[in-house]
Image (cartoon, rainbow, N blue to C red; front, top):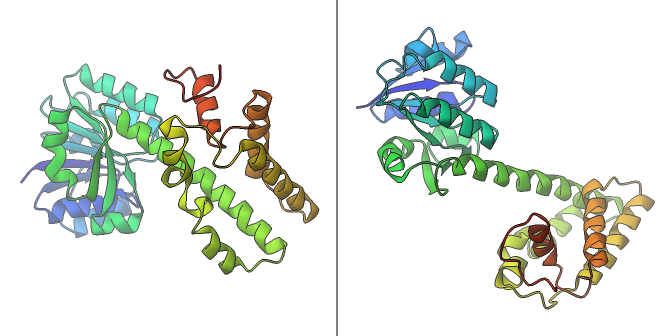
Length: 297
């Protein structure tokens, strides 16, 4: 049995702390909301009057908080009571540079840290089946493994300190854009008279629904092959047709419009006859990432 502190007993944190209790651990919780602490007590947890009190003597310290400034405030308040033998496991979704700053603050006190934000939903938090994106030294990930396994059924080593936090932001970045693009496409489909369920079923079998990382990218740009399976000029033409159609039926398409503009930028750089996945190669080059992917010189 490990002695654990859990700071942040909200929608995700409360069931996560409960799963640690069910795993046989002593979990002392702290939250600013009295109701959250009461719920934690009702499932066998202990309650502290402050974060600094909660972390005293804890082998593992978990934080699951809304924003980075809250995590930093907890760290500032706990530095005097944190043991250098504690392993600090930060599971909030915060800015990666804030994660780096927190790791640095803890490191000055000799406290080890893992950044381990989660994927999936509060339902998965209850069932202990979260996806955990872990960033940390290998030895620390091994030490944390038994407690993390009580919280998630998929634990991914993202490649070192800070990389869990970075992976979470990238995952949500893409997911958020796909959400808006999906809303645009389905709204346009309905506005021009298509059956929505039919459209969903059809697109679920194409790159539109399957995603480019699972379809077009592995076959073309990730192989450093930009010979056209689907020419960018044609992608631009089709995107223009869709954007014009949307305007005529008064459907807003901000993602659709910016996509057309990105294709136009690629055309201006002489990439119109290449595969449409060349936009990835173009963006990598613009970002100064080494080993360009097959762009013409």
